[in-house]
Amino acid sequence: MIMDTSRLRSVLTGHVDAGAVPGLVALVARGDEVRVEAIGVQHNGGDTPMRRDTIFRMASASKPVTATAVMVLVQECRLRLDDPVDEWLPELADRRVLVGVDSPLDRTVPANRPVTVRDLLTFTWGFGMVLAPPDTHPIQRAMRELGIGSDGTSPYAVEPDEWLRRLGTLPLMCQPGERWLYNTGSDVLGILVARVAGQSFERFLAERFLAERVLDPLGMRDTGFHVPADKLHRLPTSYAHDPQTGALTVWDPAEGGKYSSPPPFAVGGDGLVSTVDDYLAFLRMLLDHGSHAGARILSRAAVELMTTDHLTAAQKSEKDQFDAYFGDHGGFGFGMGVRTRRRGFASAGQFGWDGGLGTSVQADPARQFVGVLLTQAAQDTADTPRLIQDFWTCAYQAIDD
Image 1: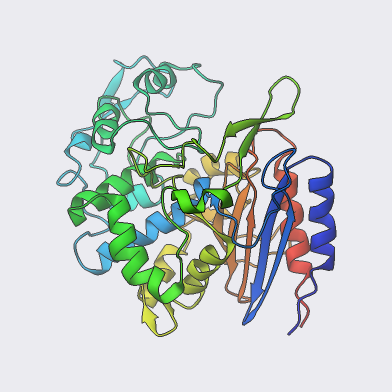
Image 2: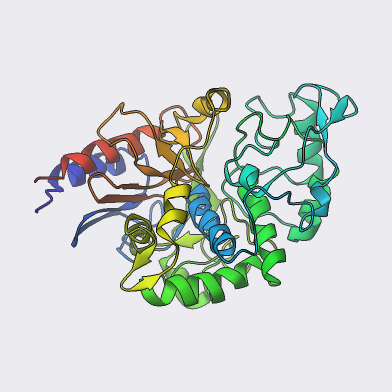
């Protein structure tokens, strides 16, 4: 089989030339064939080109890796999906729940049941982002004042135990299992993994999961929670859009930036850095039912469970509001979207996720196809998803049987 990426390169070059992003790296793979397009530069106004080994802040594309780490512990029977998390996360025991998301913080009722591991994996544990302008509701103001809210693109400035302690002082936004609420489930899961494993989440990934179980067999040597000094020249500047002019403004530089040293909190939701080849190795492992090059990372059953839609119709009504920015999958598995409907070129069963800094990672079991798009420009305007949409349109056109 041969993939023709000429249109992909042309369309993505058009986005770079138009100033949507300073540069990007895109990868498509099917079977043993891998095509990579590195376009543009790492910094606006600079001359350092994007390269295949450029290291990117993965933002929310970190979430599937975190879910996989949890499933390693589930396989070892150190965690059980439907067990309450109270034993490991006492900060989340005996929850109170807001009467409504717009209610004062003291208008609460008791939680109907404890939060479970499955709730956290499916983002149905009762707490997350509020789809309203900042500070619209008391719970949003409280999150900001406590420093526990996330913009989906940055590490937190506090230690994980302190972050969870602060989170535990707030009520849930809805009953456990009632609604899908984005983002914070993965952050809590990283703390859960650390406590069950008896070591920091970063060390667990680096030593037990990434190094022993993924990095060695898969070669994921550039994935972690910060970029070492000897690799900082491979980290681009990341950008956000000026709300008044729409121009790209520096959000995080490489030298001296948030990812240039180990963070106080290795955030499971959006803290990883990686490369197109590292993430290809990860997605190929999932496509290969949990194994790669003779190394077994997860069982086939674990991968099938992760990539199955777990949401009810009521829960999906909340998720659908995010789909313009996160792939229009229709369903959600463990830490990633699962396509249940075909509205574009992708097959039903495709799984993966997008990140707030213009990262998009998906695997399609029906076609044995992987796509990875990495940029460093925030998805913070109505127009920014178009680059990702065009990437996937052209990526699927590259397949020629």
